[in-house]
Length: 125
Image (cartoon, rainbow, N blue to C red; front, side, top):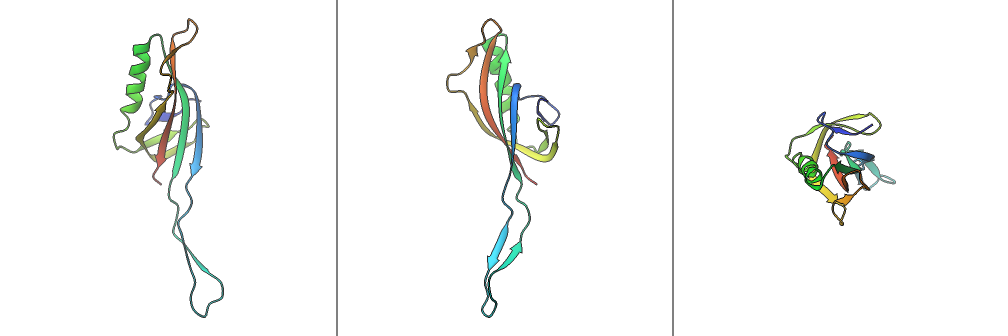
């Protein structure tokens, strides 16, 4: 399943999505007269989704246009993100963390052009 951001399939093909929960917030304290430590749970701190994929097109300009479409979602708006396993995560934002392949677009043996990339989404809740 191709991942979706705000219902749009902007990530190309051959996508992999890795869900990385952030550590919970905890306050550890010790007090005079109390043996050991006391832990105060402060809740979750969101998550990160690392996506790797390939943007494809019949020519280089189409691949560059697909890249521009992906980058246009770095607009500060939180959206629903559906990962490659079909799970939907609400309140997810793309902050422009994007890394295209250093070699740029490359030919795909008479099948057009492709651009491998890596992107990061942040789940705020």
